[in-house]
Image (cartoon, rainbow, N blue to C red; front, side, top):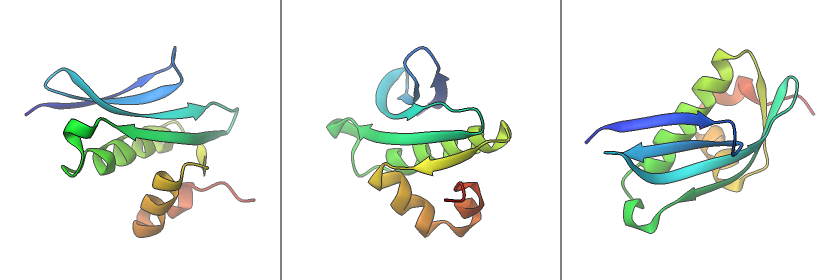
Length: 94
């Protein structure tokens, strides 16, 4: 099964596709230095298969690669970051 995570800047969201099918997305509000991650959705057909985790990791890796920080308003992303200490440095100082 092929997995692809892309930044759909027109819709302000990161999307994950499995074999070409949209499986989920993370909506965001772009900022100059900080990206606010506001909502995550995974299609019910793909729940429980690690899609949300793959999506979180892919989005955060892309944001890190762009030299930005995140404000994880989305409860799923916030909890995911708490469970993965190697991503906690991305959280913008409050």
